[in-house]
Image (cartoon, rainbow over all chains, first blue to last red):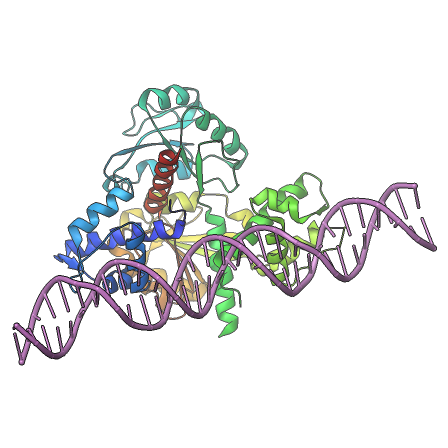
Length: 208
Length: 208
DNA sequence: TTATTATTGTGAAAAATAGAACAATATGAT
DNA sequence: ATCATATTGTTCTATTTTTCACAATAATAA
């Protein structure tokens, strides 16, 4: 079992690059093309593929369509993923309106908020009461949630959805959550991303 | 020079955990407390600190306030960072309205969009025309930009702002940008984050 | 057909990162 | 004042990740 997060991220990047190449009319691709496209080395591309038993043709490179098939299968993209958003504040609402997920087979099917004023059942993506979330998860077989609530509410919301059957959480609250047994939590922390950027800006500036 | 991104991310997490501990009335902290708080090991905490010449007291742990001072200085948090947002779509607008950055010394001072309908000079965070971005960056000494434009527009927008003096970009477009000399680009790719989550959900499920 | 070339696939080497172990030592107890 | 204890700082070890290097081989050319 591969536990290298960066490796999986690279697979996603390869996949995205391959779609772009395919759109440009390319049919096959070499490891160094992909390396250029995602910013790595050719041997890392080949090693990544070899880990997952993906093989190409000596001197012939890789067929883009069959490569995409394999990557999509590894990444679980051969099925539609229904996702709910917890928290209909600025970030949560933006995610519900964001159209970029659809083409990745990710559909946001509902949002939930504790504030009655935010509830709106007639939205394209309806916003429901947080009280309904448990039954919604169960009756719709939802496995993935995006958590976009204020940090003070994040842990209790995480506990609620994980105990309701959610298996994976993408957490936007700037806070490390204790994850329930059998539930994976990935964090997206914009403040930390910016701090990181600032740190590396500063050190490269000083080095120069 | 430290190039380990994860290490810098951990520093941010330590910092955040320390503020929480401080708010709870704690004055000193031990490496294992911090390890628990951010999910690592005590020796990694001490190692991280030692890399940056941060020292505590044998048997006495670390003074939270002086530790915070040092971490904040390393992370460049002893100054206010003015940030602009390129693209006033769903994500860009949400970021402009997001209040979480302020307490981190990050102030979004303006947004820019190519669509005249999006321009609004009387907003709390004004949305200006993309044509003005170069002069705005120069006259306000802006060094950091968040890029939240459609992927088709991302590279040209990145080229524009980098050539105007931007030194760091947080890119939300699901696309790896070629970075201009002297400009650092960090990517936040929500599709890839979700794919990653899905992959690890699937493998842990199969393993079980 | 045979030689040449380009590219893969992978094992071995190197580099980077994390973790364990423990001497050094400050603190508090007796 | 001495002892016992808790905790740091750092060295050493282990693990993970990346890169190198090259044999194997498929495609192309002569």
